[in-house]
Length: 319
Image (cartoon, rainbow, N blue to C red; front, side, top):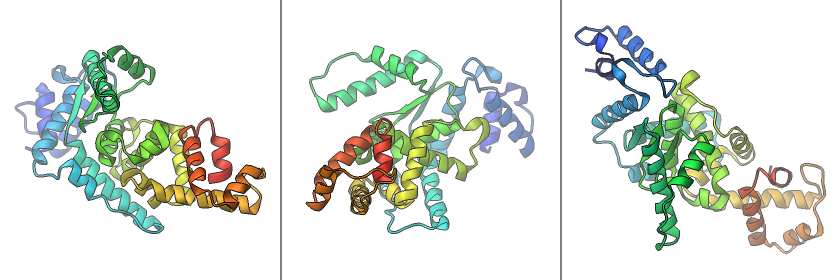
């Protein structure tokens, strides 16, 4: 029994006992998915979005028992050297897409129970807090629920490399969370630590969109997320190259990106004119003159972590 037949048989009782053609299987599968666009809508047999996604994950895990572990998938991501032409960019994204699909089969929990969803997020927040302070012993459920509702969150990735999805999430949301844990354990790593959450989410969604293009995920299966952050990451790719941004995000190579940013800033200072036509001040000219790269990197890091508020500063010096 192939995947479509399995899903059609398990989710739509009216087709059980019947022999479906391939086209009928596809139509039945598509029909089931279309009926799950709202958390309040149910598929035939009373199965919710969470039920379908859990069945899909079970099926994927059965089919991928011999798939590499997440640490192996991460280690097998290549390190990029030099600029990538369009063909090599496409090849890189295809490689990421293949690994994301294997990641998807690992540990995805889908639920239509809000309390279960929020409780799982609270446990993960508490575990992250204990990483900073082993004595931490607070219940963060209320904080977790407030954050999830405030962000209209449909999914999150955990320190244990599991992913939780809530009713209403679409395929691109699942891929987004899988890219988080493919990039680094628990979605936290050098890129996040250097540039902060906003830019980390932007990079994750940027690669999610590229993967979705490769896999043909579009229409109701794709949701626009973090548009401002994604646009900024696109600008970084235009300036420094996709390979450099990829290495920083997936391989933790943030120092080469910072080095390139210092070079860009230095070039503007030596030209005595920034991209916005403003002129470098004495302090910045002095930093370049005395080759204070560490100070420049620290200032870049601080402004990149708040790039939405510091966008004018960043664009003038780094783009």
